[in-house]
Amino acid sequence: MRPVLRVISGSPRPTRDRPLAGDRALADGVARGERGAVAALTRRCLPVVHGIARRLLKDSVEAEDVAQETFVKVWRSIHTYDPERARLEAWTGKIAANACYDRLRKRGEVLLDEAMPERADEAPRADAVLAAKDSAARVRAAVDALPPRQAAALELCALRDHTNIEAAEILGVSVDALESLLARARRTLKTALAEEHGALLDGLSEGHGGQA
Image (cartoon, rainbow, N blue to C red):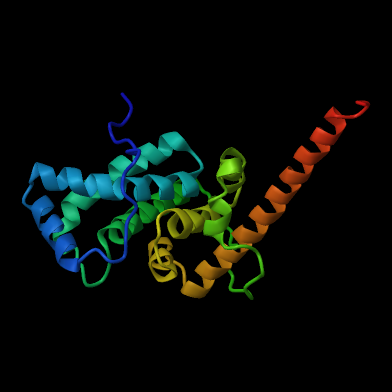
């Protein structure tokens, strides 16, 4: 039977202004085994966990397995959580990323990076690209085709509203490397979507050929 954890549509995006005391109280409730606290933490963190796993592993089934594995680890180690160091989403996301890296190592895969620091380019911001609602399906396909860590960086910064510092911590890279991942991803998306846009225009032109 497939995992019971599912990404909950409509879950609120994490915000950076949530009081630290709120994260501490929620973590304490989870540590005490309170069902409401467990459910609340899951609703908040599951989209981040599942998004990271899908981007790094490129496999939806494995992503669900990692989500299950991550939350088991979260329940077991919640007493170590320190709200002064990270938001709950970032702390849980790092556990998920490490679980993904473990799986990649076990199957002999190495994430070739892509993550070497480089000068920022003039490509549009990732969040602006991802916000193009009229081509959402094409954008998703283009993001899915990115190298794993580039896709994960976009997932965290553009879709999940993490800061570059938080995203770098989650993915286990430097901030410079994280910014390089984002720059490369933006450049690739800009090229891919521009080519797609050109193909669509060509198709429309051909479709009207011969008409009066």
